[in-house]
Length: 112
Length: 112
Image (cartoon, one colour):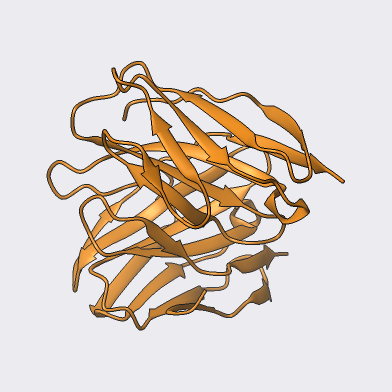
């Protein structure tokens, strides 16, 4: 599986935008970029995913570099509830293997 | 999460006893997964299923078996529980290619 690199931790202030970076220089053409987050004492929660184009949903935006070697998860207005570990994951959809491989993620702290 | 439930939510068992964890979905998704989460290791895939009676091993499958006799149920069995299997277990489902995963709320298993 292609690997991703994320900062161990980031800090933000409430009501400010947050940009969470992810590097994936060995990404292949069939790798989707997935983002999940895990709040304390909860299971992981799907946030967003994309292949080549930028994506938006009610939770966040995903900006994908033109060469696809990096991406950024954007939380437009952080709230205290957004404090979580954020995982950037590459998912290869070739064949019948649809596994997600989790790394260590980025611990986001949101200050009031 | 709506559409996926895990049971039991908590369990304490003795070393050497068999334990079965259940994952039930109402989404009719084809793919189901079992992960475990431990401090310092993050989320690791145990087994996954890509259809009824179709299962495969993940990265930490030793000591675990699974069964999927119906689309909606995916069972994880510890044939003879050991203290190293004390962990939080998460089930996940996905529809297929490129789709996001939905995770259950987890089962906290303690082997004493």
